[in-house]
Structures are given as C-alpha cells and as structure tokens.
Length: 325
Image (tube, rainbow, N blue to C red; front, side):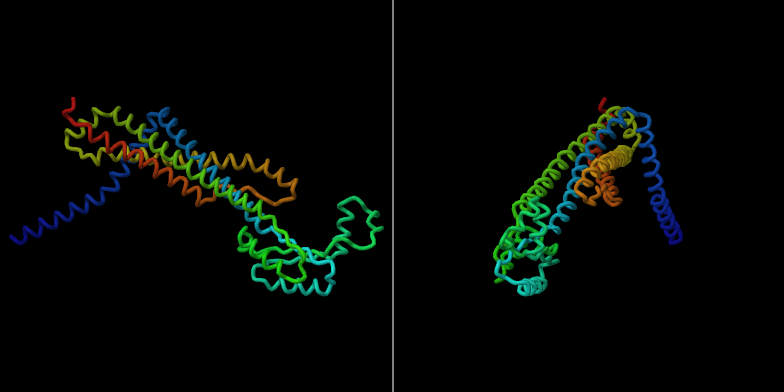
C-alpha cells in the first residue's frame, strides 16, 4: 500500500515537472504563432505598427528637444557672469585685493579682472572712435571684475543672492546681473516639460486604444475558432496568450520604428544645427537618444501594446461562448 502511494506521489511530481518544463515551450510556440498571424495580415499589421511608431515618435522627439535644451541651458548657466563696476577712486592694489577676496567665495568659480586702461583700450577697438578718445583728460571707464558663479550658484535665485553679497564689498560701485533672461529660460524649459508630459499621456492613451481596437478585430475574425476551442475545453488564458503576444509584437515593432524615426530626424537636424552653431562659434552638438533611452522607448511601447491587448482580450474573449450561436 505504501509502495503504491510512493509511486503515485512520484508520478505526480514528474507530471508537475513536465508541465513546468513545457510551459515556456508553449509560450514560445504561441508567441511565434502570433507573429505568424501578423505576417499573414500584412496591411493591418503595418498600419498598426506605423501608427504606433509615429505616435511614440512625437513624445520621443519632444523629449530629445528638452534634453538638448537642458544641455544648452546648462552651458548658458555656467557661462553667466556677474559684472562688478568698481569705484573710480579705487587704485590697482585695492582692486587686486578685492579679486583675491572674491576668489575665496564658495559660490564663485572664476574671477576675471579688467583694469580701467584695458577697458578703455577695448572700447577704442569696439566703438570705432579710435584716436578721438586720446583727447580725453582722464579715463571715464571704471575697472571691472567679471565673476563666474559655480554651477550650483548659476540658477537665478542663487545668482541673485551672490550678487547681493558682492555689492556689499566697499570697492564695488555697481553690480549687474541679467536675471530676467535666466528666469524666462527656466520658465520656458518648465513649460516645455509640462507640454511633453501632457502630449505623451494623450498619445500613450491613443496607442492603447489603437492596439486594443486591432486586437478586438482580430478576436472577432476568429470568433468561431475561439468558440470551438472553448467547446473542446481550452481555457480563457490559453486562448488569450496569442493575442497578448500580438500586442507585445506590435509594441516591439512600433518602438523600433519610433526609435528609427527619431534617429533619422536627429541626423537630419544635425547638419542644420552645425551650420547655425558655427556662426556663433559654439561647440554645441545635438544629442540623439542614448542606448538606454532607446531600450526604454521600446520597453514602454511593449508595455503599451500589452496593456491595449490585455484590455481587449479580457473583455471580448469572455463574451464568446460555444452556445452563443
């Protein structure tokens, strides 16, 4: 009796092990079968993948724009300077002492001193007055100190606080920092980010609806076959898997198409942007999607495709019964 029980238990374990081992094989078969269904309906599949890819390409392109805009913003912020005009009565020694003190500030990255003579010399060249300025009794231009804040102090609020501290130095007559353009730049960047998020949410919803509708049509086209499968004992989960894998394939191909479209667009714009940056003697380079961003885009497309197919199969396959006819 105990021997029979032992044999029976061993047989159940072997049967469970065979089912566990055969599970990934069945999933692989159904995944390949769903890919074959997409191949047998090329027009529908192509249109769905094309719409999905273009829908995801728009927020991906906006993300690319925001990323490059942030790169430009960081360059501008790091290059922003505070201009300190010294009093005309300050001599060269006092000015140099001021420069040494400012260099000790923790929020200061670099300090550049322009003497009054050097300022007048540069003004002669830039203004075009040339030798006419030699007739002046004295130099009307003050010595100037250009202060470059650190990256942390380059933001509008921090730069304003640094300016207030620098203006308290006794040698300083006037300090200047154009905060208005920094504030506008930050506001524009924040607005663009909000627009990207809003557009991305709307387009993601449209992707889910598009994939869900495509899967719904595929289910209705196979309604009789699904009813027969249920009649012979197939479970809903078994019937749903090929349609779920179809959503995954839509996501993979749509994500690849989206990545390809964004990459081509970035390459197309690189030439035009290079010509523009050359005019301003800038070394700015347009950044495309990185490898991790491309993988994230494809994974996100797969998640959307799977979500759309899951919503559709859960609703429509349950509604199909063998006795519905």
